[in-house]
Length: 231
Image (cartoon, rainbow, N blue to C red; front, side, top):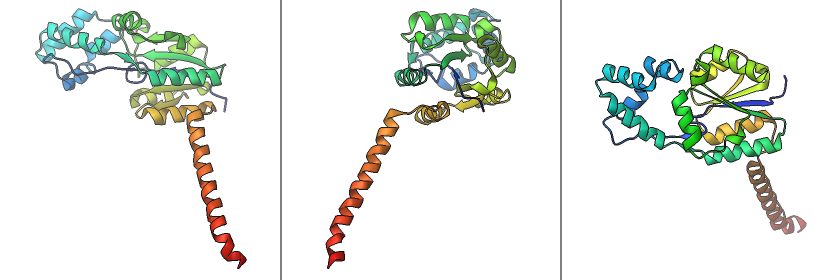
């Protein structure tokens, strides 16, 4: 198997956190429902304008479009870069200099522009970012993955995809890409370091301390019971 030299990260809920809690009448449950609706998917693909998206969803759910707009404005304002993940990417790039890092996200043109211009983040991490709003496609569409592979001249067997949604991981895997589902950040980081063959200094140091502790305990037992054996 070829070594992994390309890693592709999702943005939302992987490298960026956000809150679905707003001071509007749109509950977190409704927010989650909205981002799974066909109109939202079209908006993410750049095929439907933001205002038209809010209008369609508002008509379907019985909310004024302005209320939905306010809810998502607050949600956008809550976007924050996950600094632990940023530091982790810096670490694996330093330990594997030939590693190419990309991002691939279901995000509209408008929201991506907001993310790039308003939210403080280290975009130098990425060789390139692929927003669905620019591609006209969204995950889990296999064609979106094929598009990214063509653009980066990547072979599926050399690529790791990190995403929080199982359907996106399964789509990537269907092409031969190795998928890592991001449900537990620490476990995901550990899995990535193993796949890339790089050393996690924190984990290594911890294991060394555990081994040293076990060795000291064994020496203590040996020295404690040695006099009895010599009698």
